[in-house]
Image 1 (tube, one colour):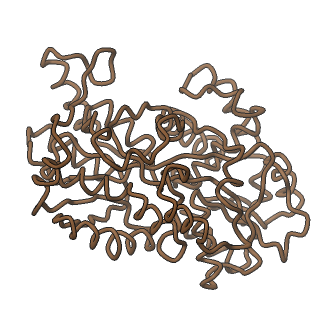
Image 2 (cartoon, helix red, strand yellow):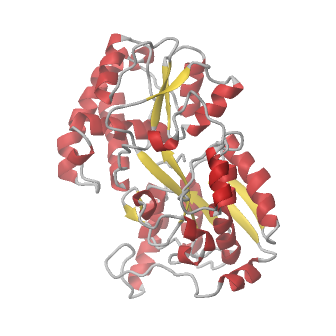
Image 3 (cartoon, helix red, strand yellow):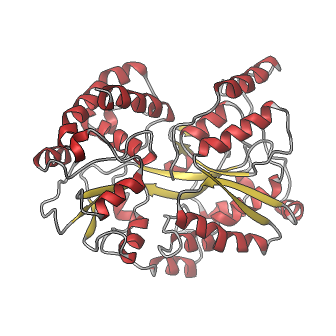
Length: 416
């Protein structure tokens, strides 16, 4: 998912936090703070209340396959449960959070945002402001198909989930290359840096704060630091001051060997994919590798595209559906979140022809016929199975690392 650095109004966020502090309750995010919780009710009661409700799902609108899946697959299934699902496209997930925070500030208890596709820094910011409903995911019948010990689903970029969002799908950061042009691909990030210098003009990456470009920064940080164990998961200024200069120095040194000598960078992943498809660069990257199979099959990317396996693994994360604390159609939002998590919808979404997103359900827990259907999904020579891609997955850094890394890149690499 394309979770970007929140462009939240400081006044809005500050006011929400101040109101909470003045109420006599603990500050959001502090020890003892209690996030808003869903009422205790049976699932039959939730279904009955949801019948006839319209759920507004705010989600990044730039993923056409994702839009089509929600409109043509998930929404009709929700209608069968008596819930109208309406997709609200946004350019940035922070737009949805801004709306929630503004309505909370205004005291509106019938909010216009019912459900948000979210992860990372936007989720963490919402937790800090007590913007999300919590303690509701245990009510969802479909949670029985989820491994409760799965670390990708219990922590979101270092922020404990604590029942404040329901898992939707997993993702793995990968680089991909044109095997027709790159006959001896690099096997690690360190080797990639050497390859870039040996093949000037044939590599670039999206400019942070683009989501994919920011992920590349974090992956490169692990490489220059000596691995994930050398970087604390939670942001630490002293650790940043120690490892970040190494990253920026290495990327600045690489810049003259990038496409257009590093004088300009693709604005986003779509721009990078255009360069790759047009044979202006030999590599691309994505946090949604399953979509590569569909792009290759459609001819949008070269048939010779292959995922680049890297020693030491690559970043892995999950994205979620969160319910704002003041959602106007809260019961309907819970029903949609449960539906989206159901084995049948997880299967439909995993089909590359539909969206190609990796499931969050544990295939050992789903019905045998659904597991067989997952195993029968079409494969692609371009993309290894998820189990292989995620075998040595690197943990995501805490959300607090994102902004400092992006700001440092702009100052020391782009501006330097």
